[in-house]
Image (cartoon, helix red, strand yellow):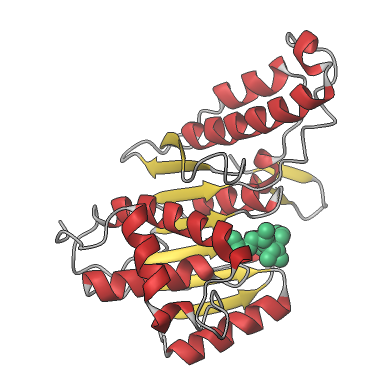
Length: 282
Ligand SMILES: C[S@@+](CC[C@H](N)C(=O)[O-])C[C@H]1O[C@@H](n2cnc3c(N)ncnc32)[C@H](O)[C@@H]1O
């Protein structure tokens, strides 16, 4: 078991982020006059709330282990940089980070920040999450606000590479909004546009959670920040249960058929055969 860290909760992480110029300046969170940028307030809070939950998971690893993270849809990789800083400073350990994003400029920016910070424990890759092949065994997959189905790519990638933890804070949920208009038990609810919109979000996260459950993960949903700050505040936190490798997607398919929807997560588990027809590899 790892030793108790000095920094554990969101408030302490926020205080650290506000005070430590070593990390906050390279990330561009402050103006030249030393004041925190107002438009970064939401992001800083999200990072602090997410880090708080990740630190709880980190404590479960052996102290001497190099914990390997994969940050999917990393953008400027604020989350990985902050985590790396906290773990090294507060815990005296150096984890390893992979970051992947489809935006080439952002990946180049990550490389620049990495070089300013002098971190050697990070690799950034331009491309889709689903196409990324890490050359180390990944322990924890993380994703903060990966757009729409990029969140599903992160979940699928985590399952495929056998990550022990998959921790995802989803962003916009576009896929089901147009699908749940009719032919399901709650049409009296979803006939109202605003409720349909909100319900699609709930259904999407329920399907994601069922998919993880069906792939041998224990799943918890929690809020990383107040919904007043952002409605995109839900963390789907999944832990691989030892010895539960058999896929059982009954709950996932039942939910999908109840609402007459076609959610795409299982499609990441299909491969093209030589005659180019889709073949399920479950
Ligand atoms: C809303 S931003 C979030 C960035 C970062 N995680 C953060 O919280 O600041 C979403 C990111 O997802 C990336 N993205 C979209 N589709 C992707 C995919 N299929 N694979 C990897 N990255 C993707 C975009 O380029 C963008 O940087």
